[in-house]
Amino acid sequence: MYKIATDFLTRFLKPSTIYKYGFNWSPMYRRTTARLIEVSDDLYYVKIRLKLSYKNRNYAGTMFGGSMLAATDPVYMIQLIQILGDAYVVWDKAVEARYRKPGKGTLYGEFIFTPEEIETIKKTVDDQGETDFHKSMSLVDEKQNIIATFNKTLYIADKHFYKEKIKNRKKTN
Image 1: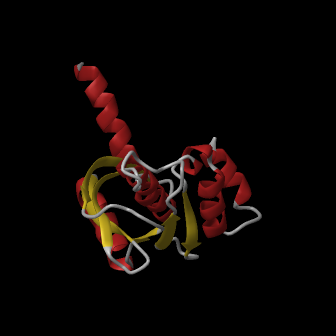
Image 2: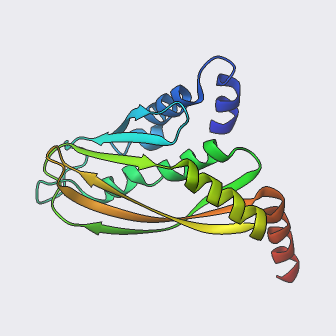
């Protein structure tokens, strides 16, 4: 459904606008209580804000770690899907969460890809058919104190390579 809506809306709006408002209006992402507050036109940069509220407050009165994780979880994957385009398959493969301090107020996170990273991904996928790519990001408070760090592993593959891999896997099972 999201892909169909995105394809239709690109006739009228910039991909960055669709990305920002698509996330913020999506019931799945709204439940995290986070909001995308900035998206660059090339989609290489995304910034989120996560406010402490009754919806994400834990027993100790601080931000529930699951809310922090959920707010960060889909961003890199969908960002990379949009940057790379339809010739690639992108999946979240793993995440390591490290909570450093209690989240007591508004938190911010930045998701950044560089042109060099995108070229490295494309070259590796062209050479090997698939790759695992690692990205880290932190949620920080208003004083830039690191509250939580998330290390993500993203799986990226050439779409044709991926389809063959799945087809061959089904044959052997």
